[in-house]
Length: 213
Image 1 (spheres, rainbow, N blue to C red):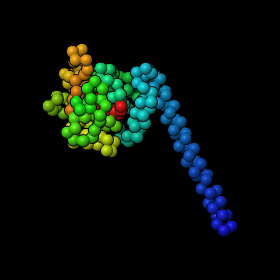
Image 2: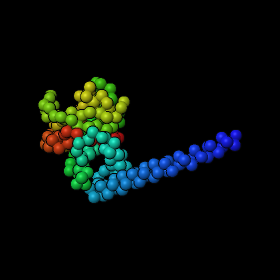
Image 3: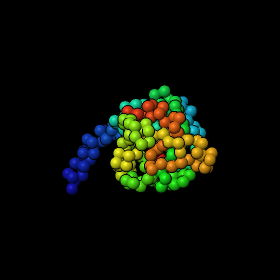
Image 4: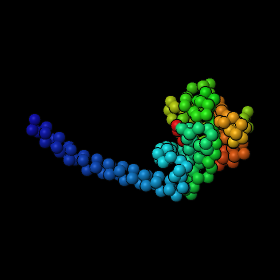
């Protein structure tokens, strides 16, 4: 029993320095990331525009996406009604908000505000989670941007559901003026027609989109 006790103490002492070193590195990395998030948020003047906790979550999702190819982070805040500009594109290198506009949600997700979300084919609901942008094409909705859903069980059927970024007349501000809410899609994050091509060409080819509610 005594030998076993001494062995446990020796093992603990032998492992502890490495464990402490690993923990120290992890703490330092976490602190550095937190400081970078705060610095970017402040310099991009996002206070009062994007909720800080949402930006923090989106930034962490961006950092975890190893296949990203651009220093751009698109955030969609579906907790806001469609009558508000809830689509944001932030240049993380320049620490600058480069787009802030309206975005439609799925017809079965809600009317003015999205409250129901899905990853199911033909649900016509919006999906949340992390996406990675891919290539563009011309389809039934005009110039469109393919998306890959990276959040397992939440949006990983984006391709199968044909969830893409595209422009739509029902996503124009004039629709809000006439109806009191933005028009709705079949699950796609549809944008105002006058901005859709410019935004698509900016974020295409491997940038991160983070959608939350």
